[in-house]
Image (cartoon, rainbow, N blue to C red; front, side):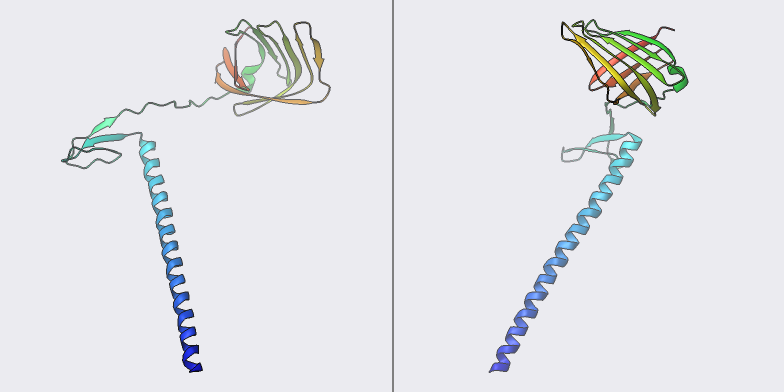
Length: 197
């Protein structure tokens, strides 16, 4: 009797483990299929976007389809995709040397003096007549202009000047560049300037 009970317990335990292994295997298989499908879709979408062509067609049942490979017998039309494609901007460090000036849409003015020896002087008069100015050294990496300065002064209507004696690093991103003008973006603000001399 004891031996039969032991067999029953062992059989139940083995059956439970076998069921658990089957569930695990099924879960792993579903996960593997999901990952494989996701990878396949990413590659397919990537190739379609790389070619830049998406088509639309209507099947025999009147259902509209979209895809990068329409059926051969379908009358497919290419879909025009509109989007912002970011142009490659190359900034030539040698062409930055000089004095640049610009007026903002809100009435402010910006003057930037960039020198070949790495020195920069930046002065911005804002529409509220406050002045933001610094001088420091600059470095260009790809489209990013990094400035390190130990002196910043800011004056606003009667508040006087504030000065910083600790080194401060500032970063600007070029959103457009030509030898005659460029646009810098910093903290969501665009600075448009043109070469003066």
